[in-house]
Amino acid sequence: MEQRTKVNAETGKQDYIITRVFDLPVELLFRAHVEPELLQQWMGTTVLKWESKKHGSYQLETKDPQGKVVFRANGAIHEFVPNKKIIRTFEMENAPAGVQLEVYEFEKVSDDTSRLNMHVIFESGEKRDQVLQYGLVQGVNWAHNRLQEVLNNLK
Amino acid sequence: MNLRRDVFQAIADPTRRAILLLVASQTMTAGAIAANFDTARPTVSKHLQILIECELLNQEQNGREIYYHINASGMKEVADFIEPFRKMWDDRFNKLEDVMKKYKPKK
Image 1 (tube, chains in turn cyan, green):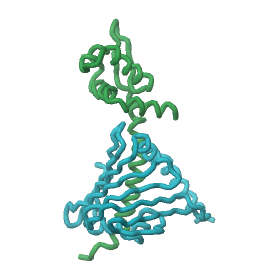
Image 2: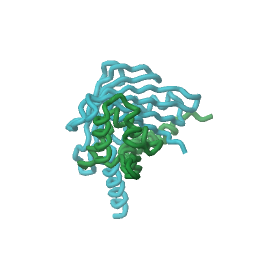
Image 3: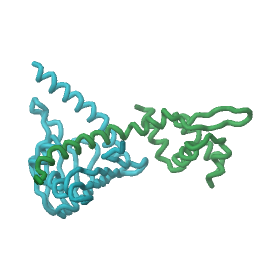
Image 4: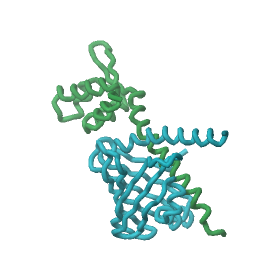
């Protein structure tokens, strides 16, 4: 079966591209990226600040069940074209990856399907590789969190 | 973890990537590999040595010739590196789709 989410990260380069086709009209795919209450649901993070417009900025935060901040990120929006394109920066606080430039392109495939192209550019290839490796760490952490949730429910 | 970093340094070089692509399709001697490049033969040998040290290539003595072939498990380690990251986004986007399907207009 063909993978719906594809990652293209060429060795030695300082960017990666993620593409994904959604079973959603492009308008809904776009809304999921710009409405804080929707974003919070699928990203699993809290939106502290959100200005969906050119020159706007945003701030995200995730706390663990004990209330300790485990993730905080922020960025500025450089281009905002509804249902088509967003260019923004993204910076995870207290992380070595630095500032990333993110280009999101939203494309209509049919009335009910759409495609997202996400191009993420880093300051260096090393910084990009750190983020790619983050997937390994994150995957493990999430598995632990899920296990913890299941265990809590058994209590 | 040290080994893993070396593997990525190894494939960061375009000549070494080209060597891997060549050898991926067939087992070759150092001479046959070098014939594909303008680079001096000792330089190609050095690249081959690095690829062997990083366990991306294996060498096999066959009579007077040494043949190079790809080490599939070493190459798989490189591919696996991206997979957890891809999976993380795939999970996230599946969630997005589930959340947004509730907002689809009823037909």
